[in-house]
Image 1 (cartoon, rainbow, N blue to C red):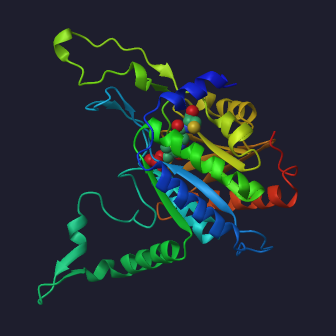
Image 2 (image 1 turned 60 degrees about the vertical axis):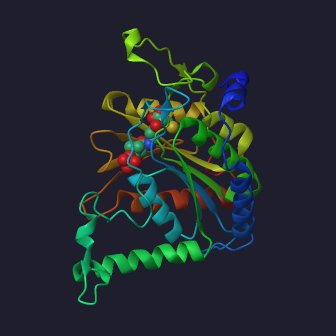
Length: 320
Ligand code: 9Z3
């Protein structure tokens, strides 16, 4: 259990989000507009809203930050999952690390971006013929999501920004009830330097080796489940490097934080395979070829589980 004081002190001492008022207004508007729509899949009902978190959080070592600790995540999982949630009719709040992989941009090359363009004879720039189809498709799908008001993107960099955004989204989504989902794919720091004990200026090397004690980041999953959005369908991720402990750790998270589903993955194989762990069930999802997205199958399975959860009033797919 999270000690309530740890959680309160985290938020009380964190540097406040610069644009909190604007973000809160944007969120309220997004949630109100989407909840008044109907869900396009079979059975209809209220529009479902999912909060997808994506990318790694940083832990600054200095208030005027020169150095920071980072977490492993490109944001690919979250970006791909967002595309499949949109396809399934969900409205998506995409809380993502600044600069990480974005929905509908996964195909863009990291280091040869300019190879996508040509200067035409009229001195205009255009996408090269061989990439036109894929770029057109991506622009079409992205514009549909943005213009249709189904995708809201909220960026973070630090663990402080991430947890404040998650809290803001979760408390705003409590009105969505059973139709809300959290899909927590972001790689979240376990250890951090509390803001009030952090060096104000760049740590100097003249003082010799750095001896630093990190505090534990309060586990917010149980707060999310118990206080912020108690009715939402909650999916968290468990990343391990040791296959011997993966499932046991996923099951512990499932029970301890009362998640509906924990998606377990290993660093060595996370692009090829995930194990979807829920109360009494384990489903291994493997991709057959590199052209296939693991997330397509994962989101289909989660959509079905979420439907069952909604139609049985949360009991059919027990909160554990
Ligand atoms: C994951 O396990 C994601 O699947 C990956 C995706 C980060 C591996 P990429 O963004 O990678 O496609 O490059 N995310 C959760 C990692 C995490 O921090 N989980 C915590 C834990 O394992 C629980 S919230 O303790």
